[in-house]
Length: 499
Image (tube, rainbow, N blue to C red; front, side):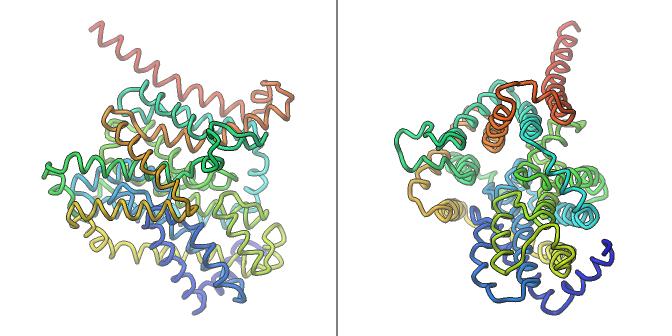
């Protein structure tokens, strides 16, 4: 069965009355959950597994897939309006989305996010349909050395997130590395920096860090600047219309990062969060006006939004084609497959084509539903900005506490949320950028694991990182990415001093 015949089979499932209903339910539930800080798609899919027990597998899995990409689509709302990322994959969206909201362009930021998400999702579905079997074998070829080199390439761009001082960005990244080492060593099973506390054995969940450094820190800044009335005056909806120049400006990042996000989504362990950060950094590096990033850049919203949605669909490649979950969410999805007596893998396309192609076809319909639902809702969503500031601060704190508590139902995590909120507040006061901290925390654990696995494979021989073309190429790109901007800046300063 070729791709177009399979897609026809899939549309017969997705366009049935039952299929449309379950796609709609999935994307609506996913969008609502994505808007709530901390309540990601993992929780939603886990809750729905017992609900779908005994259902026909095709519509049940179509619905759960809709919850997954719907949550990523909707997660940008709280990131843009409140600086409280709904899910981990939308943290990078807040870097420019929230400044746009503060500049009276909340409507434009939400519209850019919705359109970018739709295009990224649609492009990735087309790629998923055409390239799923071939890309699965490529994803398997990524061994520990290549993963280490890929993570190194991501970290080499920390200077792009410096917001002024590269030294402060590096200090922020080092602290992020230190935090990610807390917990049980994944290889030896020994405790690291836990201070004999059972609460630290599992380390810190990413959302505790993200909500602390962004949402709680923002609350502290709002309280500090409570007498500054210009803040409340600037937070207005603004126009939803995008001019031709806006569309032209976002077209390049959306197209490029849809492909980048999809490829990173295919790699097990990468996912939407890493894809959104790398896309943001990539666009800032190639921009002619990098100084606009972090201050309300259209490209800074379009790039991560198209990338994280593309990565979400890309994550289905190893799941459907190989039966290998590439992220926490797809691991729960794998459980849903097994509960419904469906075995994902190489035989799924031939044995159960209505499921394989039904999920892919439903993504086309689901992306259209998401765009139709989200664009008209923007004026109503943006009314959050008109809520009195004391009440808004209380809501942000409440949603952040609920989101963190729902992860592990551990009161200790709430204390840690406040601790990281205080750290984020101090970082803002003393101009230490938070994005390098987040990036180091995300990549640090995977980077350490890949390095140690590589050392185990090679018996401690570092040449394993340069003996294969793929890791060698990625390491060279990393070095150039880190050194070239510094050299250019040094030459520029030297030229200015001579003049």
